[in-house]
Image 1 (tube, rainbow, N blue to C red):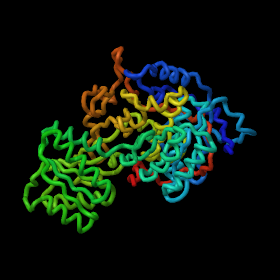
Image 2: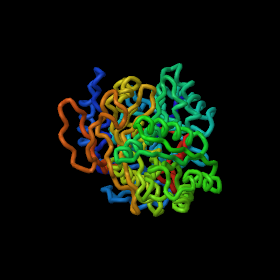
Image 3: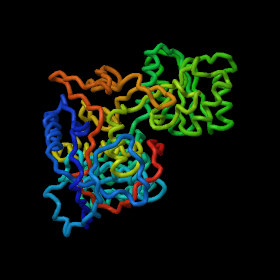
Length: 491
């Protein structure tokens, strides 16, 4: 039996201004489906929307102050009202299954992803879309059971999730017989198979981007200090390929088991006992206390920022890396912050918590599913080579289904990441990310594109409230506490 959907009366928040997700779809050169007029219609719909009221703020969380004020009318949101019958739904409503953790230690991430998905449906005015959140659990069999309920009992037309790569094959096995596409939040490419797309930020793209930039700045001798494990293995392999492709020299890749005594020995071996390191660029792949512990060892063994450029990954995007003087000046590749910062302000104001990076992926995937799904072109148009513009910037899926994000280069400072090289404004068909693209400063005013080009992405999200979304599920009403912008590592 289908669960009764839950609708919320949201009639008192200011309407949305056109934002980057209203231009989510980019015009395809290869497809007969003309996406640009549809995006324009979404902008028009946003301008004509009525005032709506946001969901009730979480009762168990003390709201944080947003980074910048947003215009939200003072109000007491009502409790959700349950329709008398599922027949109250619009005819032909698109049913989007959302597989996220709703119990256990990762439940906070799951609730934030549900909130972000609801916000996405509001921004694209998806009144005819039903969001069906289900608990993916931590194990493959739990994710498969939730997927089976969505596909067989709820008639879901697309599945978004799960977050862990090890659970994706089990979900795909359930979805494949009914040809239900799966867009998972993982970046584990071993989970790819027919009918599956991964929207997670791949470490390979991050490494390639930062290596390319370092070579452009005159760096030629590369080394890496990486942990053992699947994540370290992927970084090591992509680092080798990226350095080799540029023609630079790979001096060494040293691995370690833990950031304690084993890491100290690894740093000593990496330095070679020399006063000046035999490399001019060093990739690190840690965060938090583990990163600070390793960074403190570098100058002791003669490796400092003046002689070796430290390189990092997008995991540093929302980390206070600059508090450590040994890391100030380091470079890392990450999504463009323009649209993301606007999303953070809106999310924080509406839900009383900072969104994790996974919430941004949920927002982009949901908006994508809603807009493409309503036209019945989801499976085909996911492979649009021109890509899509979301809160994580420009992205597209490669031929295997893995996401390629256009990334910017940032430098670590005491006050946060400083933009050094902006992300691509658009992809060139057939080119790798970062190659053959038109670049523009995302902080500058957008310019008028040529007739054959795609429209530029605006720099910030709108400041509207939630509207137009219908959800049904068993999610807790409490927003996560203490969430940061970090992403739990892919398993």
